[in-house]
Every structure is written in structure tokens, then in C-alpha cells.
Length: 102
Image (cartoon, rainbow, N blue to C red; front, side):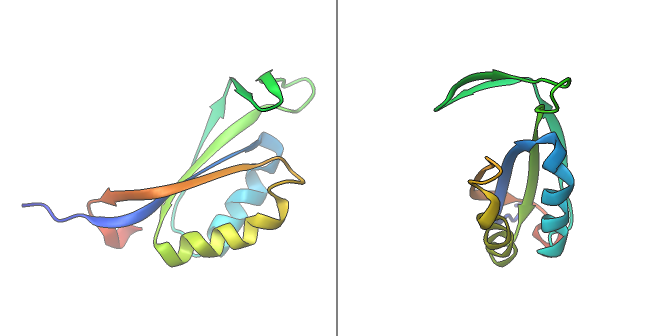
């Protein structure tokens, strides 16, 4: 039987211009990897939005998986800019194979 380990899956929705700031925070937290995907459109409390490359407000989704301790370190580091930079951070428990990779 394959054994799994519980880790935190973290998703951060941010303006593309902030991707480097977020990935630097991920690296600083000791998390070993991340993935960035473009986001075309969405809807939130303030209504609908679409990517807008001309205005520089296109968005990305940054995904990473981390241990509990590293996830909390990342959340603590990013918390001060969640409101000011309109980031959305979510995390939940996931089971992974090869837990030592995360």
C-alpha cells in the first residue's frame, strides 16, 4: 500500500506584477517549489474582472505545497500585504505521496 503524508496546499491569487514578491516569500519560507498559472477572469465581492495586460492588472494563481510549519511561515510573511495588494490566499490539507519532497 502506498503511504501518504498530510501537507498544506496553498493557492495565492495575485496581480502578475506581484508574482516575484510572492515567489520570493515562498522561497524564504523554505518551501521547495511553486507553479504559476495565468488567470483570465473571475468574480469577487467587487464584481467581475478580466485580465488586462494593457493596464498591467492581469492576474496569476501561484500554487505550492508545504509542510505545516513552512505554510504558516509563508502566511505570516504575506499577511501584511494581503489587503494592501488585494491578494487572496487559501490553504487546506492535502495528502501527498513522497512527502519528503514538500
